[in-house]
Image: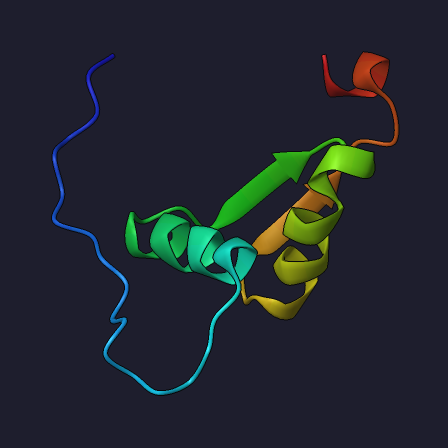
Amino acid sequence: MKMPQRNISVNMSEKKQMRVSDAVWKIIKQAGVDTIFFVPGGQAAFLVDSLGKSDLKHISMLHEAGAG
């Protein structure tokens, strides 16, 4: 399935600092995504932390086997 092309960006001209993980969720939200499914883990800790601050609906799978 081919995804539609969209012009998505984060306004970096603001003086406010933004973490990369916050920008990731902002861009995903702009792309039209409203729900995230994820498996928490050490390498994704910053993403999971920022996800909790976003307005995206998120569903955590506590183990890989539960995601299938």
